[in-house]
Image 1 (cartoon, rainbow, N blue to C red):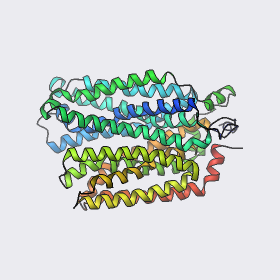
Image 2: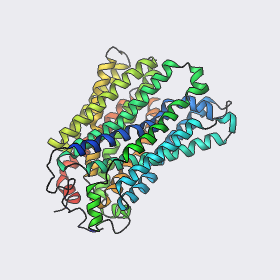
Image 3: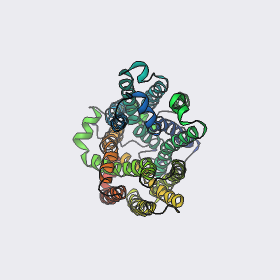
Image 4: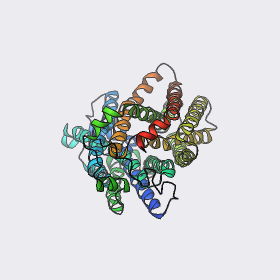
Length: 445
């Protein structure tokens, strides 16, 4: 890799306008990127909200219920396992051909299979081809989401000034989380206007068809985005990566990879356990009404969005490491108090879950840490490789680990979150300790 790659003066790399204010162009880039991320994450997570219905329609009727559930969630997990490969491939071309092209490609790769799931025939019509097609489309979705989040983070941070990288990542992360909120609200709305029989018969298709249409709308909106100044500068100076970007990442930037994977592990625990799994856990363990659990979950997600903005803004002011440490401790303590209390008293369900959601806002600072860990020429590949590998390992296995531990102790989810938040504190110390070294890697003088 050319060692001069990251030295050019520009917004993201600390040049002459590194401390300028956010302008109208930045606001446009942030808003369109966040909106696109929200709609793409909606496409990815809507599957889990209708997993039981999908399982009953795409597998044999005489299959044991436990096996059907395992198969259904196995297909859901396949989306996570496909993330590293899809992310690395798109990141490779993003570092070679441009950020915007892959930003558009990830949307197309998500919209088409989501729409296809909503239109495809079930097991009753085409037999074993139904679950196989479902698996294929889910893998395509995973490949798309593997390129979307890292690509979006790189795209926006290379547009804004260095002083606003944390805030930009926070805003974009809040957009991704908003996609989960949209999925939750759509699921709640569907269950409120359709009976269980109607959803099973035909209405389950509507959220997937809607997601496909969302994707094509997003593709149209992203046409108005411009390639990042960082990439255009590297391209004009012929300073793009001279070898395979992923090869350079593995050979020269393992410490950055490890730090990025550690903070991504914290992100997965925060999102998968506290936001995606907790409503179902409360329904199963204390028989909480599904409607109530979804309403509380929606409030928590709104607080996650607020937390992302706050966390990102504070990181710009006080540094990524200290803010990650504070939010990690806050999440570990608040979720422990919330979960242990809910097992015997749900009186404070809404305010306590809202507090947990706010501290899940630590997801706003995670991408800022990872983005700053790699030089511009391989930034997309470095971030994508670290983030998606960690998400495949931890995001895909977390539900299995937590479910297994639940057999031994009903407090297992709280134990798991507390442990991973401890990892977050250690990672924050590493970020603070190696801050100067990481800055020199990403922004050499």
